[in-house]
Image 1 (cartoon, rainbow, N blue to C red):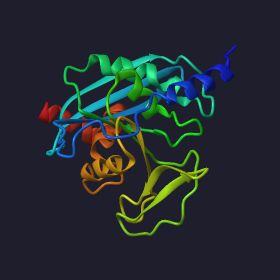
Image 2 (cartoon, rainbow, N blue to C red):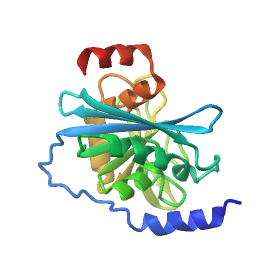
Image 3 (cartoon, rainbow, N blue to C red):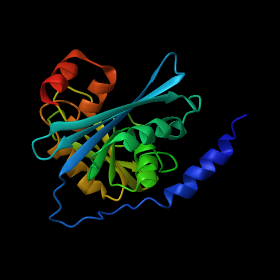
Image 4 (cartoon, one colour):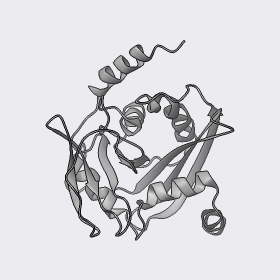
Length: 225
């Protein structure tokens, strides 16, 4: 039997290890930015993680790794990071390049216990991470404008836990939160630096495409790597 109470307590305790400010200087320019995405196969019994490493500022793919492992935990609301991080760690350990920054498809501190997958993964591998989610898990925000670049703070119990960003016109907004070792402002800045006309920033767009084995990404990988 899964002790969900103990797992929630672990989230609370580990959330205290999250560094919520920039650990890099104002002149910081990353050499490599990675995107990370997690999905499930075979009716959820297999967890699949993909990490795509892009060179900055060209945002050209320079390495990717995929890890598939047996799923360690069933889906439990609010505890998804425990289900996802083992496969992410497995993919991370296969990388030959170490990115300076990782954008994770999921929540950072925009989580009821301030410890979503971007924070969980960031603390475990000790790297700056950003959470970019497609939906809201918690918090409230004012109505966001329809113009690309419009944004609103995401608030929860008087605390700003993220930013809601209209990354592309006529698309649902993204929910951006810091994961680890970065501020909210810098998290939004670097997500915007990685936009190339799509809803998702290039690192997570690539990770998702690689993990899903979509034809465009498959052909591009074969051409460039």
